[in-house]
Length: 342
Ligand code: AMP
Ligand code: TRP
Image: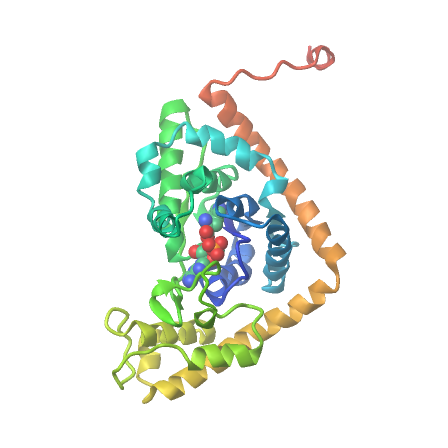
């Protein structure tokens, strides 16, 4: 059976981009047709300046929202990355396979590093090595597919390269994974700045629809989306990125197609109104379920405890194999255990 792994970082409140680009497919497709693991990747949230209490809060919230989005622990494994030591164990081995140049070529690193330098801040070394930890997340479970938005394509490509290189040097150990981006809404853009991704850690609130936004706030944000000076509704991501973004969001929410939807609308206003309504309807059940789950924190904790146990059992043998393959001496077993074997 195909193995699927994906994750979400608790660096901010989850957005419509996370939902349409990734989480919705995890719930609607992946968990039904594959052996799937979905992870709140909290170690990744430590790569930029962070507040410990906020990371804890956001981790719990992300896990709750995953369940609210329909990810079902009876069908898949839901857990928190730091509860399973194998991620960090494997990450170090992969650091011994990746190169410095490879890391510095990562687009997301270059962008984040440039922003951080502009602010005069210093960069955490973990921001540079982040894609290696992400590769470890994926390779530890021998995942075949990684359902992610477009922004993660380069990172999954690195995971592939590291898997191939490790296998060539030290013998076959890892499955070589591939990214599976969604057909529509692979990159939901910021409503106020359609040249940038709708990212949860960005500061520009008015351009970001959060999964827990009230319907009024959703409508306000969509109605105020930046468009362009044209009048006709056309699907032209290059020339009219604002309108194309709205069409993609509407298409994703209504299982439609952005090009054919474009021909239905004669004005920007009507497109915005329908998009706002469609987003409100898509978020409604997720928000209702989120409220229920918040009233039952023990349930969510139980899911994460069981999830970590299952994930550990899956990752351990692969990571142990990698330790042996790369040349690390196996720990010497207890004499009693030796006797038991002989
Ligand atoms: P992150 O928020 O970076 O942890 O991303 C979690 C998942 O959501 C990843 O698969 C991302 O590719 C996806 N994602 C995040 N932002 C967007 C966006 N604006 N459009 C589409 N997918 C996104
Ligand atoms: N880097 C991913 C993001 O920012 C999150 C992530 C971490 C991830 N590890 C992963 C996604 C493993 C897929 C598989 O979105």
